[in-house]
Amino acid sequence: MSSATPTSGTSPVRRLSLTGVLRLRRPSEIWFKPALSSVAAVAPPNLLLLALGRLDLAMYTMAGSLCALYAHNRPYAARARTLAWVVLGMIGGLAVALVTASLTRDAVVLVTVGALLAAVQKALCDATRVGPPGNVVLTFISSAALFVPQSLGQIPGHLALAAAAGVWAWLVGMAPAPVRPHGPERRATAQALNAAAYAAAHGTGADEDHAPARAAGYAAVQAAWQTLLALPTTGARAATRHALERLVVRAEVALAAPADTDPERLRAWAHALHGAGRIPRTGDTPADTDELLGVDAELAARPVPLWRRLGPLAPIAARTALGCALAGYASLALGIGRPYWALVTAAALYQANLTLTWSRAVQRVVGNLAGVLLFAAIAPLAHLGQALLVLCCLALNFGAEALITRNYWLGSVCVTPMALLVTEFAGYQATGDLMTERAVDTVVGALVGFLAAVVVTNRRAGNRVEQAVTAADRARERAARLLAEPAPAPGALESARRGLAVALTDLRATADGAAGEWWGRALPQERVVLAERSGHRTLAEAVRRQAVRPDRGAGTRTEDVRP
Image (cartoon, rainbow, N blue to C red; front, side, top):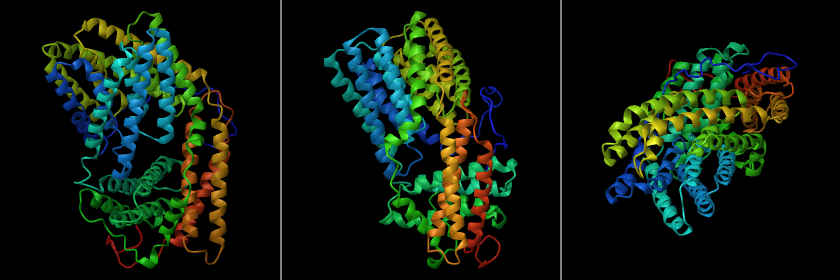
């Protein structure tokens, strides 16, 4: 699973490449869902305000409506909770911004508060894994609200508009549940099966050429487990959950023992999960499902407290606060009337490490500048009437969500003119001035934001790699001890195997994140490679010991236990 080479150290400064930064990917399987949800959530409030002649209030309704962009990959029970928290978080950030705006018009204070809000939103979204789109939408709304003149008496009404639109967004997000109640978990399982089939077909041995396929396979499997573990363990949905769990187990087996895998069977199972048909059977009998006892161990494990998840994110939060503040101050120094554009640009850059932040900075600049040119083409049409202004924004909203999964810059091409048109809901403005200010703020925000990321180092990354290697070694030793026993307790070996798979996945993610940082101490690359190689050998041995059973048939019948 390693992509590293055995070496005792790493260079403190790494080359920042442009290769592949703007390359388009295949669209997400459900690209149309967030796109349609966004339009369905935004359109009714905006059209109602248009009918009432109060489009100037659209910023507050959009705060709630844009919550519909979240949680499309989560089962509906978990989605209901997540969307509720997103709406509350959006209203909370908006409330802080509006109160601040009502108390002071000092631009430096407003930028400072916006930067602190952005850092808190970034840390909480990363710690809770809320996203996509993560913290950017929250920061866009709260930062823009800081620069809208307010009085304390107006705030309750504005928050009520946001809350009402948030409730509507929650209903839009939950609307597919009666039609396809198991859609999210079926898609997650299908993605795990397809990723495992691809990895098995392209080899998953210790050869480093196969590391990317294997890493992607394990990431898809872990995402599927996170989705399934969010489902109820009892009731009508339990049977569906258990059937999907068996399929994810088959995907795990395929990754650990590719020689015993039929990739075509995995693909056939994945294909059968699309739509609302019956879930394919793996051929397991009740006596053959010891591996599912490992799921009970995961359910019994206590979740990591939020404060412990926030700890490792302190450098990213510091980068966000410093970068956003400096970007806003630089915009003010240049005399730009909307420093929150530079602030939001900086907030959108920060990723897991400096290398990924660089890639996002390039994508942001390219997408925003192209979006400014698109705005120049659209503005004459939008200025023909407020109805056309609203319709143009809705079309751009759909385009942004439909295209952003191809590459961030492509979605930004639609986001930028949409944001510019939204500023004209209260009244038309000079197109040239808007274009100039947005272009300057984009460049300033990206440049200053990236420099802040260079200055604020993440020196804890090396320590976390050491901890991840230790955790992987302990997980491997536990599995090896059970393999040495002639008859381990039911479920114990499967629990140990699953724990080892999780530890190896965490190790690869931690090592990749740390490898993209600058100025850190040398990483233990040789230990990472050895831990991964020995861990995967132990995984394969555990699978052969536990999951490879005599075939009950041939070909691709679902009754066959082996994938």
